[in-house]
Length: 345
Image (cartoon, rainbow, N blue to C red; front, side, top):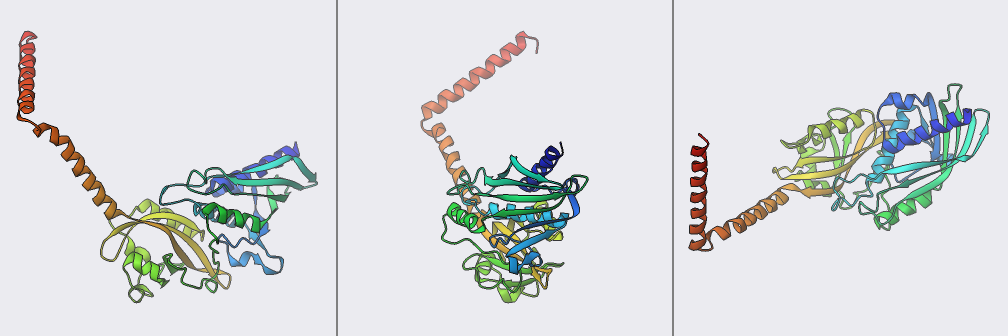
């Protein structure tokens, strides 16, 4: 009975991770407030530098809020597998499997095999689904809440799968400190801001300048990314983004932004917290994909006009057709009026 209860707790833990549940009380129902989670260092996704033990090449996640942030990091990573040019609103889903039948239980500890796999990466443009397998060792308190859990898996094997899924020779290494956030990020638009209000811009690259029309000298130290917002910027999307930033979590978001001269575009951007001396001080924004909306709207208007012309063309194709049409309409009107008289209308 105890093993079944603790198996259910582990299954709930994995379910919260895969769904990125944000309600803290649900996490607190299965995790001790001082829970810690140990796992290998994963350079392909975001995490606080303060969690790293370099000598062991592993991270220790401390507390319920940090566990929620780690779940957010996993979702941001997997969202990067989507081909946004074909599936702009796609969301990669994944699930965990726990091999409870082979679990080993000793006192308040439980060891078991587990796996994680995506379920729709191929449907969203990926070359293959990604999967990782490993072992876990969990400790529980008397209330059957998780006090500590260690997740063991092959980091390099999973990174290879990520590269294969996107069809790339390399996968982006996500920096976790301001010091390691170096380089221009190639053609990828990049913006670095402070992590506290008013989120002043600290650095941009040439890709960001080309995308927005703003020059570095006009915005660095002077403006925030609010200058990209406009009449059709979705306030709910902004609210969701700011909620994640307030909790110092990474987030992927899609925003309707505007260039310096008012040109409208959809910005598919991932935001990552960066630390200085173990404190979150900055946010890094990387645009994964963008769509120029004004061009699409102009194309749609042109298509509508062409369709309208096609519909009107038969009406003017011959005078005989027009005459016949008018005759039919007139006769129909007379019939309606006659029926009206007969029925006393």
